[in-house]
Length: 211
Image 1 (tube, rainbow, N blue to C red):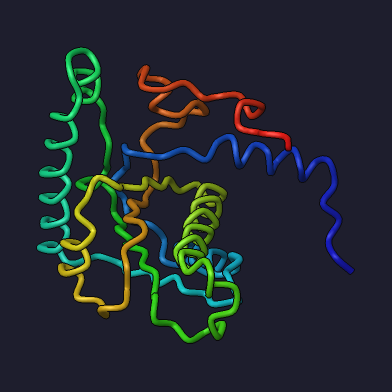
Image 2: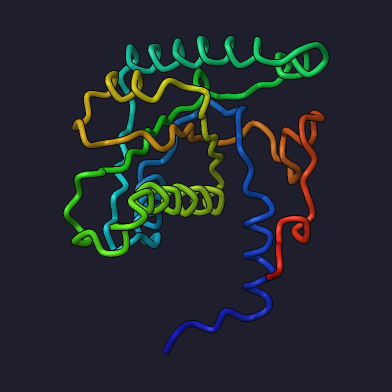
């Protein structure tokens, strides 16, 4: 028999979704290895096109590699800041957009675009479904981490090809996400970019179109 997802569970699930935040401020105490393994195991339950399971998690522990990732962030962040003007540029410059120095765990998440798992089912006309499948694993990991008291920050202000070379992964792997993981310094229900005036959340009705 399937489990009974009752009203109390649904309320707790709504809390989990609401409290899943993009974390940039981490405590430096280590993450329990069993907790990390449990979150990765839950991530692997994510749906994937043709059951292809194309996600590949790489734990980045080497100090030199981490430093090089921070350098690519700094270059990209400076260029991104320069692309804005006036007050928006000043606001961008004031934002903390990563926790690369503080987070005890770095995870690079790749899509193996040469995988034979799934036998290409469902991706002949939409090959990008492989990468979308990796995103489902990232989101599943994120929710699992939140449920275990961990924070996750997705750093996208990077040079994907540079990070891929730094981590010496197979040529068929494409970077989808670079995640910082650890215990958050502070807890907020509202997203940081809302709190600091970058962008308000839109109502759900604004993103639904009827045909």
